[in-house]
Length: 116
Image (cartoon, rainbow, N blue to C red; front, side, top):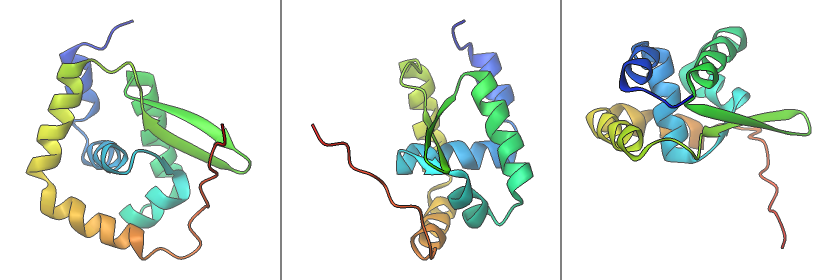
């Protein structure tokens, strides 16, 4: 099923889901613990919103040991990516503050490099 504009905008109509998506857009990939720390929200709340974003077709997830990482679906249409980029421009100051909080997070999960 392809992503329709109405579906994307309904899904992003919630502030938490919008911020999660924009953070992932900027960071490339984040795990649940990073997102709960940055947004200062409970794990169940963040996980619920991430599940909704997956169901909408915006995010995918991958497991690496105990960590579950979320990223944008690579199949997102160009119009959807452009919409997210425009939304990020509208939230540039807020995202900067959230990224500072993320950068100061202790015990961030290590990213394993894939060796070719």
